[in-house]
Length: 207
Image (cartoon, rainbow, N blue to C red):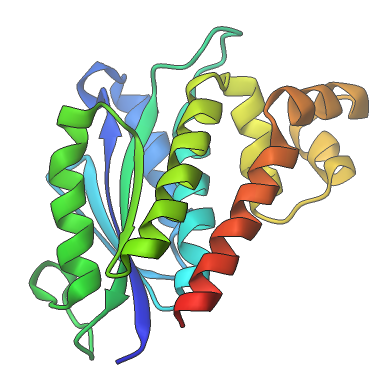
């Protein structure tokens, strides 16, 4: 069976969000996940089936930056998304995510259930113990970066993750190029890019 990825996530502190803010976030997430099969349940929780596991981490980070960017203050954002990525075989065809089976679904769901206790926001697991060492290091590093990220930095990183250039982002967000560049640097984009590449390297070794 081919390797697939499953994301299980929920909106952190969703009960504290204003209804209009939560509605805006769900709209952004729906657009961001449109390329994949996904389902929302219990209002603030969701599951995503990613056929190409190499895209799973970037998809997760797009979701997280979307949530963090809702905070317009210069201080660290309370809004975030908790996501567990499970990488493994899946029983196809996948018709309904809630009743789908396979290693990726089991790993994603199991790790997600443990996340609240661990107090972490991103976790990645596969059926390969050696790969899991690398995935854990990448997750821990990204969690540290995202913990310190402000809403304004996340707004820019969100667009970079979608493949936009800095000049394009400046026009889109009506900010100067120097302001965008400051947010790129402070948001530690260079490190995020490297971690995404390391993640892809691990996935390529698994497939």
